[in-house]
Length: 185
Length: 224
Length: 212
Image (cartoon, rainbow over all chains, first blue to last red; front, side):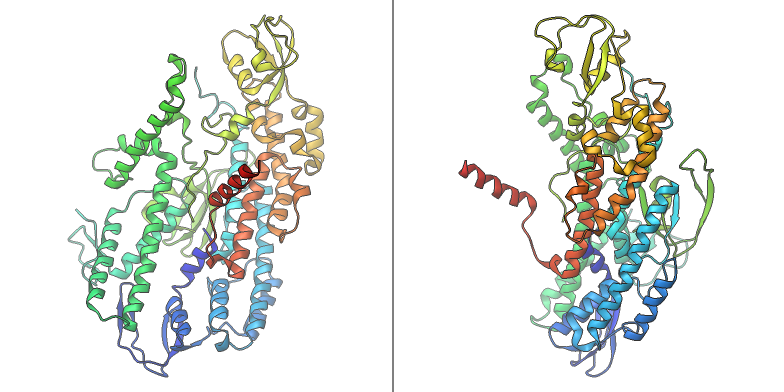
């Protein structure tokens, strides 16, 4: 999967906006939205929030976790633990990028947030490589990967599964006679 | 005939009918689920003609409504954006299936041929026509370009033997939607033993596709 | 974006993929062998060292391409015998088990894993050890390939890549692609439309054609 597709999925997440217009409920195929009243916070999917923001029709309220203090805690926790800690959103990376790119004027300390999220990301990716290496070395058949996010999986997913598939085939070479020598001439 | 219907907004609670009634929102979710599964599964999965049909119906219906609305309306533009998003998932899903059909066509057709009566097809009628034509075109092409210039005893090539099969032993990532118990994990080396695992709802795993293929088909797990 | 054309990938194991260009190239690689009976002239397949028109006497040493060796070996009469190329022999297997990461597999290969797996088609008593060494070599070189393909922030990895066999190179490229895709997305370049590599190559070819 491409990063843009993970981002596409992240755009379905809900965020709170404060609109500056009024509009009745919208009956979308995927569910109802609104009503929209000037000054009254309302939840909408990220794809709509960004669009409205670009048209200067709303102000965006960042998700609770998009906050320097909270993110510092998350980063420190991630560095302390050997396992993957739970992230505040399964799309934390995508949302950080989207919201900071399109609504940084509504998010206090945007640059610090960007750095903190990136640090957390780097720590997690380093852990992911470490566990990939041990998975390969131990020749394991199954791994539990709780708390890993879609974007994280997709930055090494193809590489790792390809390597594992090669390994599996090289291992079947060790058992001659089973699937082997099936070609008759 | 349709097993899924997007009509009505409430789930049919009495189990009298076999029909599974989905709300439009649930319908879109099952399309997304089918899309991701198809993207990550090594083999071509069962086709979902009912879902595709209902989504197309929903999109057409919405388009027709929007034609009547006045231009420049904020509401209309929001609807349009949603339509484009759904259309993207739908076409990406169908394309992904076409890619797999082109990759595995002899095996896909063979599976279809040996399908028992009443068993659901892995191909929609349109995909079946596409696969047959692709097979015929490939055979003709190989014949014209190479085989007819070969000695008579070497003019046959079995596409079933020469086109690689989907690798069901591929490793995949998944998220568990419905808890499963006692999934048997085969050992990878001689020193290891087979063991069973429980798949807790919401947990994520890396495992060989073959082990959990039935769970993908039943919707108990989601490939990621 | 989806690609317009998907080449058939190579097999890995006892069987080759008939329609794979990589496997056709791999099966051209030669291995040492011996004629167990008088062979007809095979100059086209064996190349230099065999003079045109002469038949090959029993006992001659040969360098046989894999595809021909497989064909001749599988027939009922034993026409040829094959030996292990030196990189799969015990001396080299010891080197691999000591430290596989230092070996230049491209120079020694360049199809170390796939060619090695193919050798298992010939009933050599050392087959289990060969299969084991190939597997362990892959495992012990994995980490370095992963780190360099996913860590090289646009750094030059050519020194490492030069020492990888073809299978490892494909893996390396897969890792680099994932890293690049992510970095492009992060920088916001994913939303820019770029020409497909097919179109780019076409442009290049036209250009050089005009030059020449």
